[in-house]
Image (tube, rainbow, N blue to C red):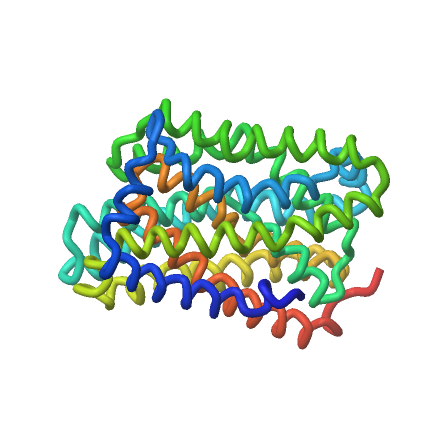
Amino acid sequence: MGLFEKWLTLWVALAMLAGLAIGSFAPGLVSMIAAAEIASINLVVAVLIWAMVYPMMVGVDFAAVAGVAKQPRGLLVTLVVNWLIKPFTMALLAVLFFDHVFAPLIEPADAAQYTAGLILLGAAPCTAMVFVWSQLTRGDETYTLVQVSVNDIIMVVAFAPIVAFLLGVTEIAVPWETLVLATVLYVVLPLLAGLVTRRALGSPERIAAFTASVKPWSIIGLITTVMILFGLQGSVILDKPLVIALIAVPILIQSYGMFALAYAAAYALKVPHRIAAPCALIGTSNFFELAVAVAISLFGLNSGAALATVVGVLVEVPVMLSLVAFANRTRTRFVEA
């Protein structure tokens, strides 16, 4: 794990503090950035999101999808958790906590925004950092790539309909045009750009070297986006610091719950640990880069939905590291194959 990935939570926390400082002392700067929009897409953020998403899409190997048949049970667990369970449990938890448990502490309009943000997190599976988590559990690298590639291909067609359905069920207005535009801009086009890049580079060695060279830009894009978001959200956060902790509660429950479900299912299906561990971690991880991008596109830079997705970024690394440790401690309980 590189320096950026290892200390991602620290970098994000520092970016939050820097954003709050910029928002307090230079509010005109963040307002100018927020105003740079075309068709509800913020141009500055669009560049930053591409910096986040593109390196992951270069890693998607369409040829690797042919390896699905080698270990279908592990992939089945991942797909069921990511697409048939996780988006819906995240929406359920968001409604439960923001509309009921935390209702006395949150304004109804803010609750709807936080719910929307968590729906976007739940419907966007699997960040590029799952390759790091897989490596830390001595997971099968090739099969991890297969799982990530299949999930990303499904995301092209499934992400927008699932988000629209869940936002509709929770009575949040769905700007369909912006949702489709954001999906094309931040999923389809980066995936195609990644495919073109892979073909241009040719050999696996050159692809690996290129991916390693652009990976730091992904973290830089994320940190800069967080800084801008907190610059705009500064007054809300300083007035209600408790809101960060409240948003984190359903995310934490969802994360540990999805891991427990996927890991137990892999164990019951006698999936080898080298596949079971990354399978469960992929089922837990959120594609927070995409969630942040779409939240900004749909609801704006200074929205509660965007803030909720950033809280997802904040908790992702410590949660995943704790799950990696648990997976390593329980390795001997799984079959070897």
